[in-house]
Length: 498
Image 1 (cartoon, rainbow, N blue to C red):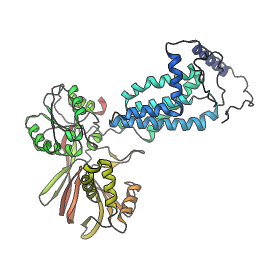
Image 2 (cartoon, rainbow, N blue to C red):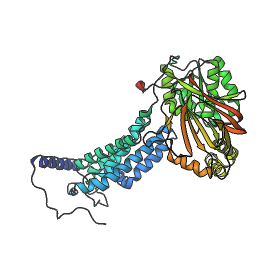
Image 3 (cartoon, rainbow, N blue to C red):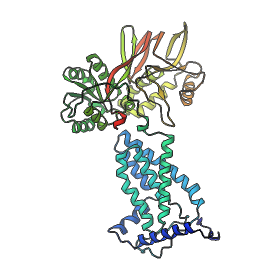
Image 4 (cartoon, helix red, strand yellow):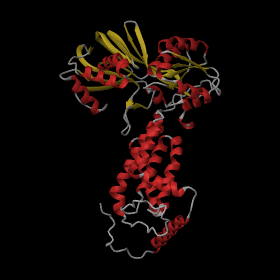
């Protein structure tokens, strides 16, 4: 490997302002070389080396993601994406645009100097760009984690001057480019706080400063212990009822009889059961995400105990739509989605093998089994004609793709069912995959989409499976899907108070 500094390139002519800035840059470099901060000579060179090739930031991202909260995982991923864009920009454009030699090491004590000196050009500092990109990306998604990581990033940037490998202006330019890369990533993939659902229709609910009157039923099968303890720390007079999954429905009914506000901690299936009880008793619902999938809580803007406790203390809530299906006197509610066809079969297969293999392996195994079946799991009459269908999906509200982010709902009270259909035909599995890859706006003949307030299906195959919020039931004959506009009152922190 050879240095990319071409010493044969003639030096540019004199320029008064530039010469003054370069002189100031040199004086600042020499000033830093004269400083002797406690422990810095042992810590900063090692920290600087640990940031080579982004190793320090990958390790930091792993530590952040290990906290197992959705916000932390997004912050770690955003930090790494920002770092990648910054490194690409620095190495392809930055280093080749300004071919500045490295500083002379004469004023720098030997104990500080790196054993392996970099051979690339000095401007801008790649280490500083990576540090600034990572910490800015993390902070845009999670300000708390940003504050934790900021001292490390600052120390890495400082170490580049302290060890004599960069001028101060190199570090400042690199940091500016890194921060810009993080904001560019946010432009492509908006942060969660920029996608907060509209704060409408706002409604009046009890404000419970210490949680008195709130009864939270926690499904222990979802691993909710840490979350309910955090909520109890924030709302000490709240009542927490922990129960097994089989007892959840009964405990929710008991809690509703004595609560001013019904709370629930669990996955989407548990939240669905709590919403049904809350509607029956006319109670507002407080949702604390506690399962593997927490689509309703996250689309609502509640990610952890901090979000929920803030809304409960201040009495902040909105009304949201609820979906309902009916079939031969049987009915059920759905807060997220309702599906017929291949997806319910996949859910049933996954549940069948989940205890044996674990959730994710069982999901993959179930998908492979279902996709190999060359048959149509659903037939329904549309406009008087029978049609084979591979999948019918109805979302409680419109699902969007924003930037490069995965689909989510931005409005939980828009009054419509987001209906998607994958038609039957030859090789239905391949048609389903093609439709999924094409996205919700595809005009593929295998895929159709419509937004309606009510949908009636007749001639549904008897015994067809219907999945709603992770639960599965059998239907047949005539199935009706409809909206209950603004039927449920739910606590959520409002955007102007976040």
